[in-house]
Each structure stands twice: as C-alpha cells, then as structure tokens.
Length: 464
Figure 1 (cartoon, helix red, strand yellow):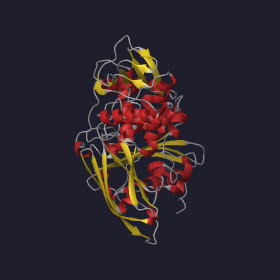
Figure 2: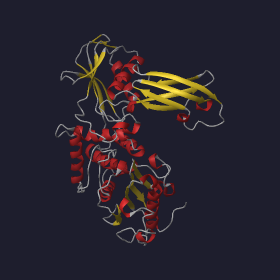
Figure 3: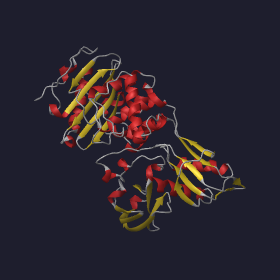
Figure 4: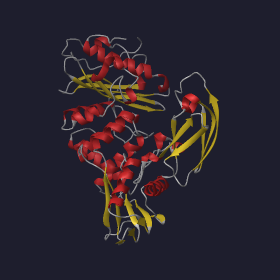
C-alpha cells in the first residue's frame, strides 16, 4: 500500500465512500495511470486521478469515433456499393466499362460482393465487354498510422480503402482426411499462387487447438507457400492471410465471383471517376451502422474503425481532405454536446496510433453524455461484456453482464473504458488508462484497480 489514490470523495447511494475500499493504485505508480469514474445519472464524479492529463488511449479512442458516428449518421445508416455504366446493354452483353463506386464499407465481404454481382446478373448482364474501373473518389485521403508501416499486411494494421473487400483476407483451409494432406485457398484469387509442402503427422492424440502450431505460412508478393506436418486432428482447420493490395484483391475477387455466377469478363482493370451519364446497374446496401459498431468495439477492429472515421469526413466534406474533414466532424459533435476537446488529438480515430491523445476526464464525460443520449442503447450494446464477449471475454468475469468495457492495447498502453450498472441501479462511466513502458506487465494491476473501484462502490468484494 505505497501510493494513495488522489480521489474526489463522494458517498455513494449505498453509504460507503468510494475511497474507503481503494486506498492505493493496485501496485501502479502514480505517474503511469489515469482514472476517472462518474455517475451517468448526475454530475457526480466519484473518483479521479491524473484525469486531465492527455494520454494515449489506444483502442478506447474507438469510443470517440463511435459516438460521433451515431450522432452524425444515426444507428440505421448504411454504406452503399454501386456498379454503374454508360455503355449500352446489347442482349446479355454490356458493351463498355463498368464503374464500381466503393464508399469504404467496413463490412463489405465476399457474400456482399456476391449479392452485388447477383443483382447485375438479374439485370440480364452476362458478359462485360469492357473494363472494371474502380471509382475511389469517396476517400480523397485515407490518413496514416505512423510507426505501424512495417505491420501494414498484418490483420490489425490493414489500411482502410474505398474498395476494401473481405478485409483483404484469404483463408487457408487444411485437410488431412486419409486422401493426403492438402491446403485450399478461399477465395480463389487468379493472381495468387499457393504451393504446399505439407506432410502427414498422423494421429498425435491431441486436439488441434491452433493449426498454426503445425504449419508455416510464407508470403512473398503474390505467392503463398505452406509447409509443416499436419496432424489428422487438424483436418478442416483454417488460418488466414492478408494478400494483395486492396485494389488487386477487389478486382480479382470481382472476376472470380463473377465467373462463378456464369459471367464473362471484364476485359481489363483500372481506376477512374464515374462519368455523369452513367446509370446504376446494381446497388448493395450494407447492414446498419450498429452492426459495424459491434464489430469495431467488440473485437477492436482497427481497419473498420478507420473506415468509419473516414466515412465521417466523406459524408461531410468540408475541405477535400477526408481525414481533416473527419477530424472536424468529431470536434463539431463534441462541441455540440458541450464536451471538452482540448486534450483530443486524432490521427485515424481507431487508436492505432502513437500520436492520438485524450484525457480520462474527456473520455469519461463523453461516455456520460453518450449514455444519456438518444442512442445510448446502441452505444452501450456495442461494448464487450465482462467475461462473456469480445476482447473482454477472459477478463473481469466476476462482474458479469453489468460490466461493459472497451479495451485498449498498444506497446506502452493498457486501457479500459465503459460502464458498470451497479446493484442500486446507478450506471457508472469508467475510464482507466495506463501509459508506461512496463504496461505489458500491468494488465492484472489494471483489472485489480477496476475491481477496487467497483467493490468500493458496491460495498462488497466480488466472488473470486
């Protein structure tokens, strides 16, 4: 018990001061953590420590983007992906180019592409006697995630794009069913080659918890090679890789899925703006925004969050710089809700950043406003449930579904932000952020700090 927490002491409705059960920082040093806890139903602040210091929030920054999106677009807002052409349809042949207008739909996957192409087939088009041209005008800029360039092809760091399809993921399906070992790439992408040097490891007597323990996947450009000894227990297992550029993936997926539908063409590919005389041939609408928020906040998907952030700028263009416009939209939303943005620094709205900053108080006050607003239900429901779902599935389970928190993890950062519905019916907004070179060791301390906050308010200790 070396360091006392600097608290604003207020008696809770259950009669116990919050400080009574939380005399220290659970082993954290005073200068490496910030904490803010407040009641949603009132202006009461129950606890604060370094609450006004601008810190890197990691993925808890996604809450800022999510709040701004709900306030600006609404929970039922949908992205559109459109195929257009100015060419005539002669019989079943489109005699010219097809323009694919992408708008950065973060949920656009292969089934969505199939639906878009299926609508084109229903219109009577079988052969495209022209090029497929990607219209990328929705995002004038896509921004950065500085210091993560080396990780650009890893799943957590894939950049957003107007035509990002299936998150640029290709699945490797492994089979060892007595007919020999083999691996299959899905989707089948014409520009990607797959070489397999898998051997049969036979029966190992163990379950296949993770096929990646037994296989090695190498990527060099558009070539994928797989080697290793595959146990029989791994028959039907899968892993994924990120392949190609966003444009190449979209083009090749289009061609492959179009062929599966019996289509022919296109005759080439390119990037171009849609001419004003082009007419709509097929239109796909995404699931509503609330589904994207769930994917973003439950599983902390950086690519989806960055796409959503850019969408704010694309839908409210002010300067022609999509990133700058998105930043301005977020600041306008905060100002409209009388929220302090002095400590806010945005790079991409996802928290995948060494530059982004916000204070625990600013984020906590945003949480309080969000929980009082018209979209409180949608916002809160997007957060992981303690011990049950998303990135919180294996943490803080003793508090159950009353506790919903967004997690944040970067080198040097660990964070939690969200809500707890107390037994007395009071909802608390909670923000705890660690910025420390030793943050990787401090996850148990962060959880213990939160345990102390909740137990002190409730007047009891949680069951172990």
